[in-house]
Length: 138
Image (cartoon, rainbow, N blue to C red; front, side, top):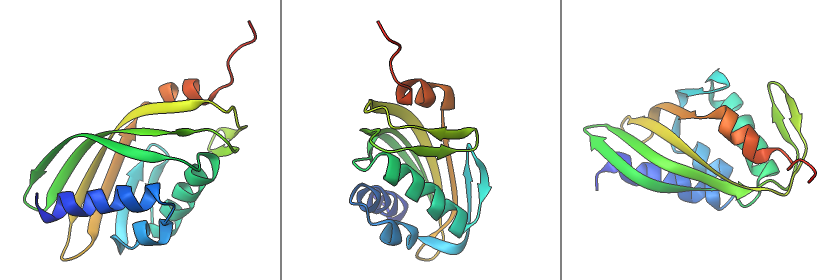
């Protein structure tokens, strides 16, 4: 394993432990984050991560596969957790459903000297919202 992969794994470990300061510390202060919610600076990304951890306190990311080349790493993974709190989204708040979710995603990181300088993450938002939504009455 190389440094980019090691750093990505540390990011996932810290996020799962609820150490968002530690997770954020793996990114340079001027890192560009691109998410389905748009481009974010460090402060906006941290608020984004806090919203997910608040709504899914047991959230974790499980690696499926990794491709590493030079200073870059691409990760295919699954975001898993239990929807125990309201999740703020650009479309409005999604109330807690109690549902377990398992959403595939792809992360792309580029490592600078010691921290990530670029981060892009993609997932199927419709799939995530379907898993977060309460089940219809039977």
